[in-house]
Length: 141
Image (cartoon, rainbow, N blue to C red):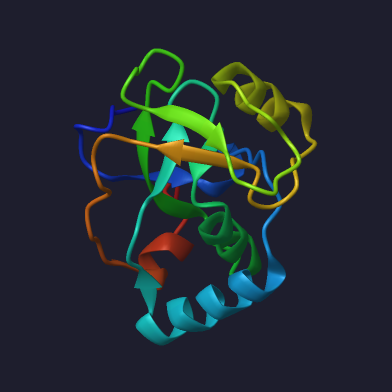
């Protein structure tokens, strides 16, 4: 896996682990746009050790709906990268959240409510375009 300074890579959808629910209306809007565009235009941000999704839960949900085998992601060293911080959204019902709690939740099979964690990262994610046809391919075939 690469750190955020590396290139965007295609990771197996089944490896990824959400820690937060998605808003179905937002997911459906993004699904329509993704189908119209014919691909992904933004990578997910993922912990390189666990597959925990830090940013991109709606893109992950779309991957499941479309039965994608892979999705574009930037894999980061979440726990050790001081440039990545986590806070909570106002109205989330939480006073604070730690990186360890995010990882624990993603590994538990449970999820926080939508818009609980709010990650900040030093770098913006690069614009990309990965066609859906490419993401449907099983890399083992």
